[in-house]
Amino acid sequence: MTRFANFCAGPASMPTAVLERAQAEMLDWQGLGTSVMEISHRSTDYIEVAQKAEANLRKLMGISDEYAVLFLQGGATLQFSAIPLNLMNGGVADYLETGTWSNKAYKEAKRYEALGLGQVNLVAAGSQTQFSDIPDPSTWQLTKGASYFHYCPNETIHGVQMFDVPKVDTPIVADMSSCILSEPISVDKFGLIYAGAQKNIGPAGLTLVIIRKDLLEQASEWCPMVMNYNNQHTNDSMLNTPSTYAWYLSGLVFEWLLEQGGVEAIAKVNHTKAKTLYAAIDGSDFYHNTVNPNHRSIMNVPFHLADNSLDKRFLEESKKAGLLNLKGHRAVGGMRASIYNAITLEQVQALAAFMAEFERRYG
Ligand SMILES: *Cc1c(COP(=O)(O)O)cnc(C)c1O
Image 1 (cartoon, rainbow, N blue to C red):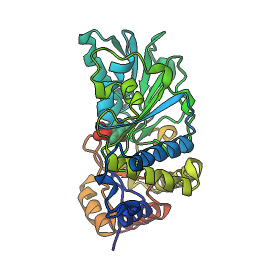
Image 2 (image 1 turned 180 degrees about the vertical axis):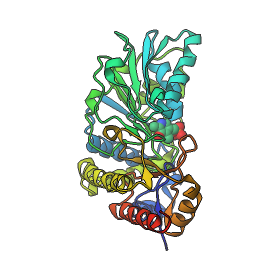
Image 3 (image 1 turned 90 degrees about the vertical axis):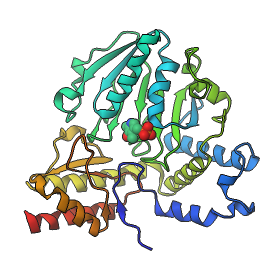
Image 4 (image 1 turned 60 degrees about the vertical axis):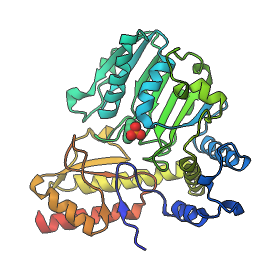
């Protein structure tokens, strides 16, 4: 068996140990004679899986009882719609734009103005710097008494990350799809955190929402019942059939993370991985990354070859070397290495070594 280093942005690499365990448990889960994906989500066996996953996530992130944790579907994109429906409540929602994803969230929220759900305000537009930097907070047009402030701490496509939580005095809503569990955060600084699982947690099909309980009861009467956070909370995320297998696999990833020493320990590895890769890029004129060094993502590292006529060859040869999915997003071009928790330091070192060797031959 060969498992290559897979730098895909999402769905992304999973820890091999987790896949091996899932494989071993696949046909006969816990002596039941069926797989876990073949049992009712309302069975006591499954509810144990679900509760254990939540308990371990709470442990990993330090989530207090003041927060509800929901295991939903529809990806982060569905949350772009669900958030205004649940939280706007006739007020003004502030949106900071720092890349493709926060832009999409803003545009989706904006559509609700026509329904009279509230107003949507663009706080600052990162597009003015081609998303290579974060707009200076002194230029942000914040709304006093806004319903909430939405941002995306890690922009997966442009590789731009905000390491400090913005200082605003309205509930903060954060799209953490590509940075959740990558380093410790203070959950209590947030009103709502959401993340699709397929980047840094598990397989596609599961979306986490962590919401402060006092924000649960303001949904619009237009909010569909599966998107209503309070409704999902009171039904333990089982209003309808949840993504049971993705939930189970995510639970295995949480156990694996705890075995690695938790988020603090994995964050150290993540910072070393990022440092290694940025050093490989900065150490030569052959490669470059245009993001402000203070805001370079530790999870998604886009880079360009100075001579982009070599891009195709770089991709072919890296693939042959067992380094997969390095093609950059079409909006940015060039290359991108996504180095989520499941990517090891050795795999990043192998990429850096390949880059040096490629430059030696074609530079
Ligand atoms: C991938 C991604 C999304 C979109 O996720 P879906 O699950 O495909 O809806 C949204 N936001 C961020 C930050 C992402 O990385």
